[in-house]
Length: 153
Image (cartoon, rainbow, N blue to C red; front, top):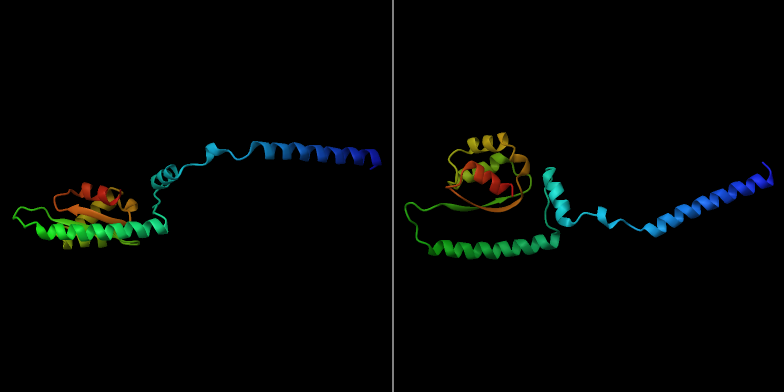
């Protein structure tokens, strides 16, 4: 390779690098492709993933739930029981809890009559993949479908 060809080749590399650098530094990040937090949660939930609050917000939410639960317990104690009253229960679903464990708790608290029947319904209808972690208020007059929808919201 002679001197002229080498200089032309070097000039071509410098020119190409300048074009790429100019494009890179003038276009900047594309803001339209960054989803909002709500959009990201929606996409993840549709794909079957479970989303939760950040640590600080979770702790605050738990404190609020605890104070709300205490208020609810006081209110429940004041209400006299009637023969045809509705049984209300706050179900706490924890991580790695199976549908059978949930159904057994509901049966024990007299929300449902048949734990295995509820478990079978939840599995057959595809709700078991979407059960969320948290506290849910359920009553004994809810249908299996209503209970499953409550646990998956």
